[in-house]
Image 1 (cartoon, rainbow, N blue to C red):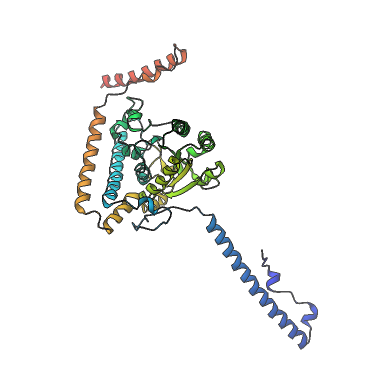
Image 2 (cartoon, rainbow, N blue to C red; image 1 turned 135 degrees about the horizontal axis):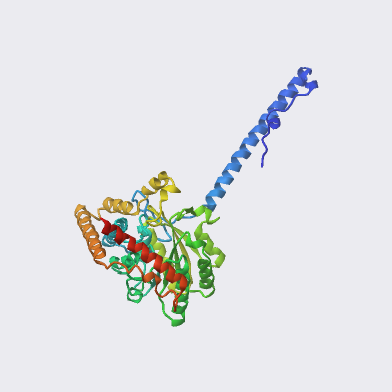
Length: 420
């Protein structure tokens, strides 16, 4: 490294130099000239250092697979273009429809929670492309292990969206038969589904089947020990599983940079299998990357970690207030990368969809919202005391005390209503 000190820029003149003759002055001038040359060399070294650092930074920046820019322009990718080469205008309209209806359902569920019809809701707003792209890459015989936010994947697997709401209303423990759609029940415990997926994938191998398994989790769950154990077992046993991490930048209130010193997809290297980062707001790229990962799994090449780089536009759940820990301008910047808007721009620019298509979809969207409202409001009220049942096989003094306290709390509402 070149040290550019003030002494190097302007050498001190000695006392002899100050009193020197013309010849001495000439020598001084020559020294100055030489110093100027050194300065030029220093400047050149600086430029070289900056260039080297810039190149090093560029080489360490995560590669992002993208096929569709935020402006809706198709970009070429020699490695992944083949996985979407056969996609038709009808397929593109189908992907757009999936995302629009999933977002409409999600918005209705959020509104129902605010109205007191649901106890809680985890929104997927902003993550539609990651879920629809990966969900449409699956075969019917593949098996999905979701978290509690994969409403778009559930849609792709044919699960009635109203069935997702029973658990959040407190009237059932799931709402659908996992084996009917190869879509496991929602998992609330963070990261545990990665272990379930790995074990299931190991069983698939022992059965001699050629299907694949996919496990969804978020950036926060990637810090869980269960996920690390899943990586270890899947790599050692060459399990046909795809780990699909939706990096939405925030694990509740913790940003990703506080969870990992490296991009999340690079963690796979330490376990001995490949990782790839994809633009999680690009439905085509998510489709292509997931297809390739699933094909690797089915052909016996083992697991893959896919990091879908996206953004959680809303709150972690309806009990969260994201304005307390993140700036509004961050959301505004990501709104420009909206997954639905970019596909619409591409459809319009390519003349693959007209006004009639969008109008018809809008009507279908409103009809879906209406049906969701009606179904949820027709659901029975949850049994307020069911939470105290089946905690212990026999009676327990503490549970009995808590039940009595809760009963008194519930009775206070009836007393208040009677007083009016």
